[in-house]
Length: 465
Ligand SMILES: *Cc1c(COP(=O)(O)O)cnc(C)c1O
Image 1: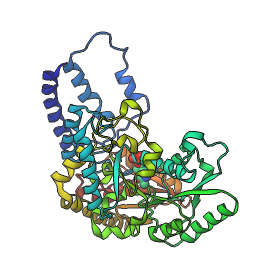
Image 2: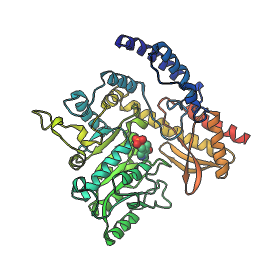
Image 3: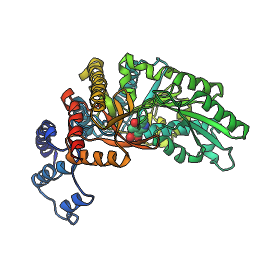
Image 4: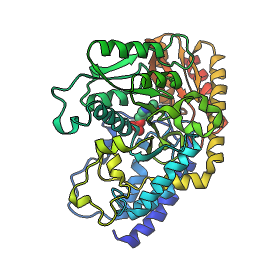
């Protein structure tokens, strides 16, 4: 295959993609497939001779879609969305065509300088103060790990990097019981250890399920009294299970009183902050050291792109940055080389899809979508609450709510039947020890009709069970 062939097949692929998207509503969101079934369909020895691309293309288009869960299906209400606005897909195609490696300014000047610009655009779009800068990671998991590694090194006077962790004081991290598992992973991978991640209880009657500032303060004091060394606090805006939002202002005040850095995980909910009326959910965020949000979730940038806003990049660069001779930029010591802000050396040109998305949709277009999703989630919640046998367990936070249908077993059976039916796709979590079904509204192309099909499908399948 050469570049002329690529141009021909790219056009075919683009036509296929348009038809694929146009036909999504006629497909089940999740295929009814057993593990191993797909591999059996493509099982073959490693090719010794080249296959004609036409045959390969045929296999791609006939075999794969039926064995995929369709994340761009307008009735995908599971997990959180991984949206892909057409404008951002176009940008990804261009970035792929140039296939640059944006580790240094000089290896991709446009990527580097556009990254700085889109960070500023997003910071302003989300209403954050101008003293935040930042960078783009692959995932929120990596951004949170970067923040936690920086917390570790701050606490150790930047000696852990060279001396290692043995013989060091016992470091402690604090997060809500509603924190995402990426926070647990960061505690594990940073060498701080899961046992030193203190999970703080949430306030019992708080509709936003914030951790309790007094409990955070008490936990830090108890650790200090025990001779441990607190290293930082990870806060949540829009937890994955039920959308929990920590009450940032008083929690950051507690952290500051103990001279501890804070990192806010707003991987999903951060996108909603382009609409000023939702910013009360993270009131006080300007006091945080770092914040992560994923434009690849609700905003519409094609996966993957996780933005970490950073007030002072110095400590993170000191933690993650290395500059061997072969990565020096001759004659330009002062340029920003983003690999020093992130974990991998190699970096994709992720800024392009955000720049194109923001230009093609405008903040106003993106805001209108998110506002619709929040309003439709409330309508769906009301319709489900009115169905016999259904009970809302957690109220909508932005566009996420949870519900039950009888006991754990019947709720799980209903979920399974709904997902086998395929018209909608929902997933589960546990809340206060009970099995609940999560519903979030956020797919880029979904309409009110798509969302309101959820109560219809639920009613129909519940009546059969
Ligand atoms: C999705 C999510 C993450 C993890 O995001 P990745 O980019 O997949 O690593 C972390 N925290 C929250 C709250 C999330 O919703």
